[in-house]
Length: 142
Image 1: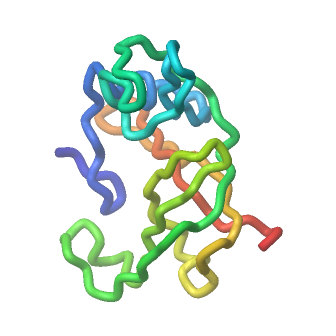
Image 2 (image 1 turned 45 degrees about the vertical axis):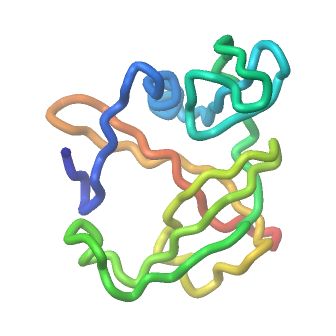
């Protein structure tokens, strides 16, 4: 597994490549079932609502609220050693699905359940190949 600035980099699969390709374009997408129109994240081959295997990557707002969070003061992985303390939050998006994201260091002391968040995109290059992390930060309206 590659590491960028102390962060392990996921390996896109055929199922997740659309998510990562959209992130490189600074767009946040999730799967939407073509049959029942349910949103879902993490990517899955079959809709958990109606069992359809037909779906479309759909761009979403990138806005939501902190559903829950934890602040970690001890690194549980060497990749995070220089980044403690750090906050990891479950984000409830406006569209009703949840995503997990670490928050920027400036947000660690201000994070709270219900606080508005917005997506931002962090661009990197690994062996000449661009890679983008969609991440969330606290919004100013909370």
